[in-house]
Structures are given as C-alpha cells and as structure tokens.
Length: 130
Image 1 (cartoon, helix red, strand yellow):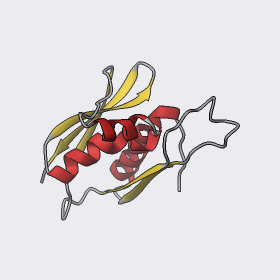
Image 2 (image 1 turned 180 degrees about the vertical axis):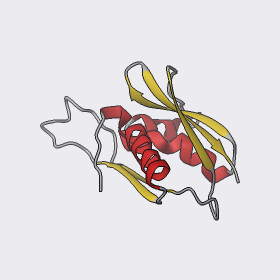
Image 3 (image 1 turned 90 degrees about the vertical axis):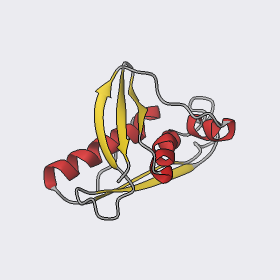
Image 4 (image 1 turned 135 degrees about the vertical axis):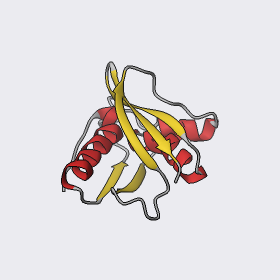
C-alpha cells in the first residue's frame, strides 16, 4: 500500500506511481483516489466543493481492458470538461481531476487528457481504446 498527496495534482501523482509499479513489477495495481471535505477550520485554506473518489485497475494484460494508457510529462494546461456540472465536480475535488480520463475510457474514445501534477509540469495521458 502506498499513499501520495499532492494538492490538486494528487490523482496524477497516484497514476504515475501506479504506472511505475505496473511497469516495474509487472503486477496489477488498484489505484484509488479519494478526497473528502476538509474540516470547517481548514476549509478557508483548502476550498473543496464535494467529496469524491475514483478507482482504476492498471495491469499489463489487455484482456477486458477499457483502454490502454500511456503517460508523459508535459507543460500544458489541464483538460477541462464541456459539461458545466461535470466541470464543477472536476475542478472542485483533486480526485475528480480524473473525470476526463474516465469519460474517454467509458465512451471507448481515443483521447489525450492532461492532468495537473505540479506547477509547470502536467501529466498527459493518451487513451487508446481496445
């Protein structure tokens, strides 16, 4: 079990860690990202609109996969969603920064999704349907 935290880049950090484990060890990894609302005393310093969670199974084996993913570090703006309600969820919770990636995989669409990571560095995820 590994825990990572990286403010708005937490999901990208977890995805990079999980991908490194899959690539290095060759084993499947369950990536779970979740963020809950901060306590009332912390909310002025870390606004968050809702709790949210995401789970992905990453594995080298393509059987039953929704998509193949490739990752690269880039200096680009993060991908936003056109739907205002989904964009509000995505922007309001670090774990839900994964929504554009989940949307592409669920729709079976090829896509390039940019996730926030650190200032000046994002993670571009290329989604390739099976």
